[in-house]
Length: 48
Image 1 (spheres, one colour):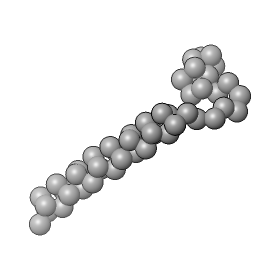
Image 2: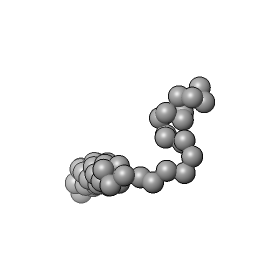
Image 3: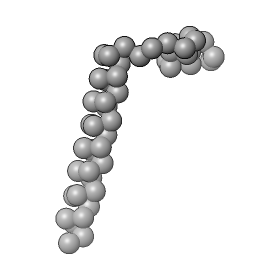
Image 4: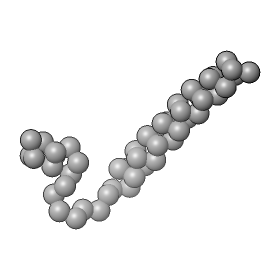
């Protein structure tokens, strides 16, 4: 399983993230925040 983890997380020594990887990470974080925010808002509006 160690080989799979290395492939999945790219742990082949210290490696700089490419701009594309950073952009993807930012987009994913924004999507998660928006999703969580929508869930919280719908829950709050249901309570009110």
